[in-house]
Image (cartoon, rainbow, N blue to C red; front, side, top):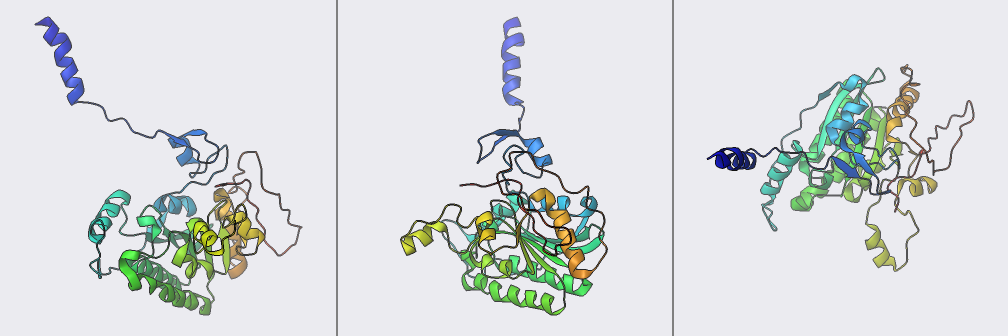
Length: 323
């Protein structure tokens, strides 16, 4: 009986009351192969400290890091038809939506919010790649348009962080209609004289690149982000030529004039704050303490701006997402 009480029963209890241990406490850097502790990576805004690799960051986490004091008011997303085409492939479209809503906690791929950036009220929209690849559907299009209309009503600058694989095939032509609809909303911002700043994150492709992502007053890219319309393999198979190294990456596009600047994630707040100050003439808070210098090694060229130079040039501190 002692053997049963002292050995068998504790073993059974341990099996029934097995402790749940959090998985993936360590994250492997895709670029360097270094293992980074999950909490350290989260505290560093999902930038790998050793290599500077910019990993994907959740939409609400990005908003919390971007706004003053992590305080923001999330805007209501308009309701749209859930499955207008009754689409089904390996599973029903409605089931896919339910799965992604459970996984991410978002209603769709775009969330929008208002808050203060260095003391100035701004409206921000963020695409989350975790929700069906950040695909642009009716709900995402409505969320972006509603956020732009809110910026128009409140006369605030509008900033969008893009991350998308393109249009959402399950909604067919209704998804493609979001391209001209968002373009009209961008034109309304322009006519009102409100700054529209686009931050291109990894990846930004397809119909998003073919619409609002390339219509900003300033285009900022995170280091190493893939930005383009068609994929590199599709282009290679079409033109039957080998594409240059780094094709469709932020640094390549900066050299060829497609983006205005490549900015480290830690420096986005002060950089965008200075741009808004330039556009609106609004006094901005001191940004000296906002810039976090990333660790060495520095693999990108250093760009110096002469005193009094009107051109704001920000070079990435290191390569990220290198192929």
